[in-house]
Length: 546
Image (tube, rainbow, N blue to C red; front, side, top):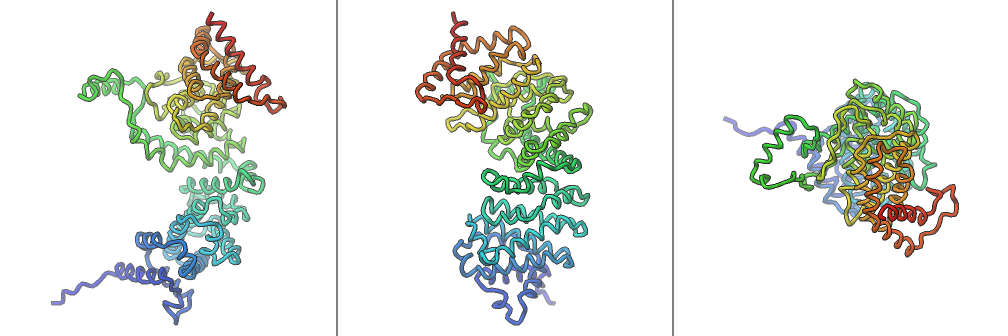
């Protein structure tokens, strides 16, 4: 009886895959491995094999950069060149084309992980600077064609999207990424998003658009066509797709957080019962206050889906029509889909969320919508001790939740290595809201004591704190226009008196640092000079101390 084991076709294919790639990654080209076969035919046969991702990634990560620029340059160039040529041919079968794109994705990811310079990337991908124009423009054209051609299978188009994301994220701000600015991919990306076969990949497509818009934005914004495209777009269908994808991604991120810490403040019967049961545990029995969730549990938060905030920021900051589309869900009180409220829920623990909130509050139309009573309950993430007062379940304006976000940031992010830019954004969000409230004479019912405590706490912690002083001056001078009761005004005065020593310390430091006086009032944040504003606060505090 013959008991010999016959290997399956898949195991034979995997063995052949490993054999060929081991030779390629030792420096041999197609003509060295198969002299009687044309290189194009050799690679066409190779691409028929299923990709062994684990093996290929492991081997590529072992290779040093100098080897990629030396003996392995030829086979790497061939893989990219023939792989791209094969992918552009829409007559090739779907499975093999997916093998090619998967291989190119693995190569791109592992090679760019080596922190290549721009010219090194050109050498490895294109074979040299001379060939870079032809290769990279062919790559961009392939991506553009894949997005636009609805006749190509959705999986191929998605694989092309993933490959472009891998490349652009890996190459970052290096010169090879500039080739994507030579073609306007905005129409093809928009077509991809709106196509029924590929709309499920909207998250990745919008992320690609944001990455393209971010390329050298600070030093060459006028040369980036995607920024102007975002600003001038009037495609409402596209905008609604983006809002839907953003809401879905951010809701997923919030749920991930809530699985770690169920910090719902709503006083339900179940929550009250759970608190009672928890208090009976031996480790909690002698605790007079709730125990905060360990920070270590949040090391993996927020999840990758939160990066959708980046394209949201670009659209909200640059396109007024998008802002109105983004806010329109709040007009439907019965809708369960509210992207603005989702962002507010997430912002206390996602730093980029503050940038999005700042972009929102710079729009008076958004503040008008946020000032209206809302049926939806806004549950904030990352509530930590001491907790904010439990808000009303319904009827509370979202603008109160914006204040809550800022209070949480000011309370819980005072570290030695202070993220100053985030704090400045947080203070300016508050400044915009207070300015809007006093301008519209909206006396807002809010837990103002918590807000004053957070502001003065920051003033005590941070030595030179001009933005906070400016906000306090606005609050004090306009208090009768936005605070709801005399008691709320008295609470502000009380906190001001309590912090008079901090204000005086600020004045001393300001004199030592000799802050320059603003000479051009048009460009000044306030017509009063820093020392004048600070002395006004100190004088007011001293008056009420007596």
